[in-house]
Image 1 (cartoon, rainbow, N blue to C red):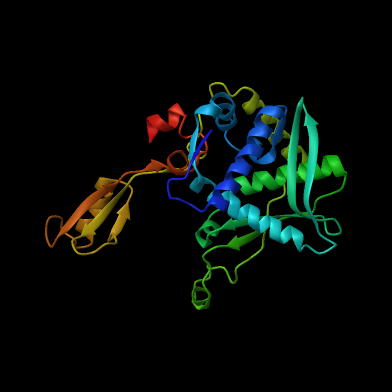
Image 2 (cartoon, rainbow, N blue to C red):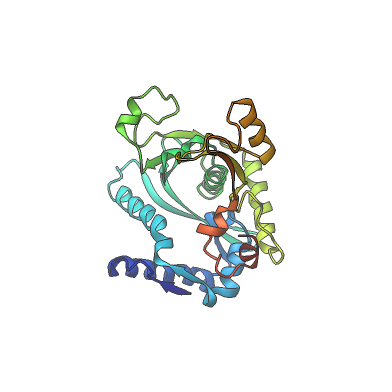
Length: 289
């Protein structure tokens, strides 16, 4: 893997990225029979390309910013966790020849609670995260099978990056009341957890021709913006040009008059374009972006 530093980040950050990349490379090639839960729930195409084209992958240290931000918080909160909280517990279970590995941020044995810290923005709480639900249910399965104890709750502790106290004073009921607004996730049955894990393992083991789904690629559809000269924000965003034209007529914004016009905002696959670790070597990403 070629690691660049296009924005001239400090050497300490570059060294941290290099060390983390080295640890990841070791896991990929020295322990091919092992699979982390976060890899399991992700697209099978990614680990395959990591193994096949690792030397050709190009990535900038900036790509690791969010990951290292999360690692820093995990390290700090683990260091100061109280005695009754078990932090960063690593659990392993052999399933059909693959060793599934999970590392729990928080395990409260007396309450049967698995909790996970997530560094995210306020906007991330406005929709359901299937990946968080899948991740914690896989952890719950490992706890049930390896530790042989019952799990009663799955909890997320979102560590909000952009929470603002003034926003919290407003009458927006959807705005989080504080910076770490804990909430519970759905807990599947053991049978549901086991079936999901087996299905995902099957996909990974047969990943040769796997194509990522729109959901995995974070598809963002095209929209049509009704604009007015001199105004940055759109008057309205619609799902098609026809709907944009109809809205303009119905709401008194006649096109070609008073500087009113329609602009198509091209959709994209956000994961492929901005975030995927193998986007530099993925033919699907290069073709569709």
